[in-house]
Image (cartoon, rainbow, N blue to C red; front, side, top):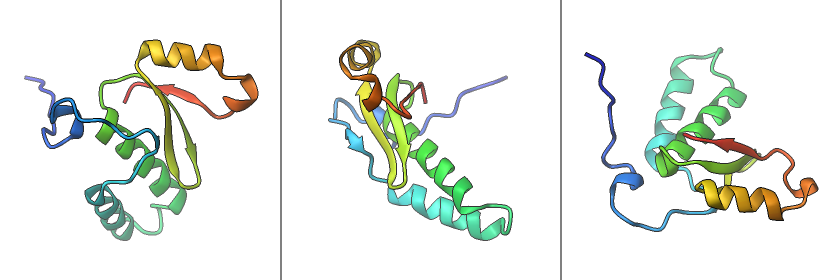
Length: 107
């Protein structure tokens, strides 16, 4: 039988806590796991792949199951809007030149 594993320590499941916006802080457990994986899988686990994985896992940690408008930059992943209404408003009100690199994700 197929089941979904849920990490109840994830902020999404801790009640109505405010979630960070803007550049997301990388949770220490994610940074540690990425470092371990990268060390164990050299030379194939590149810095670029580590960054993609860190951004993806960080976004899931904070916003699993929610629609977000975000962009990945050198410092990490930046959340610009959360939820369908906010994402729609972001796209309607933000000039195209300020939406460069923005993706809609549902982590």
